[in-house]
Image (cartoon, rainbow, N blue to C red; front, top):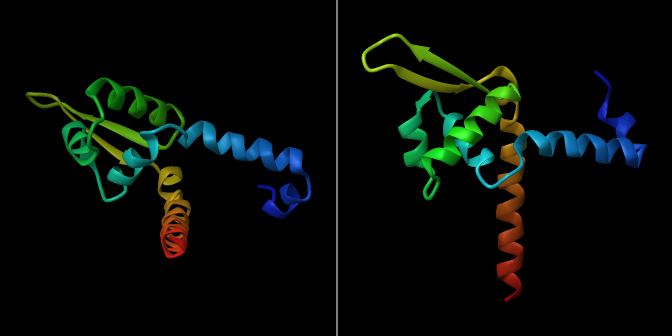
Length: 117
């Protein structure tokens, strides 16, 4: 795997890889879904309860996209009724560092903006 230093010297490659990342995690719901599953395996209804205002249809769509992109693992248990759990893949767990940095930035940014008013 190439070093990020190589991409920082080429704006075109840097932007290309930013877009690659955004294609996986962009949208209103993907990061909240990942954040919900980050704390352990969850069933569909648990995820939905954690994210206010997400519809079942949208949650299903976003989970399928996250699964296709290798971020989420869907496990179906042969029971009555059928149980389905979602968990982060190894790649999905790696995004924790990104989310932690986003949260740190968000807190600092909000504090800065509020201190100006």
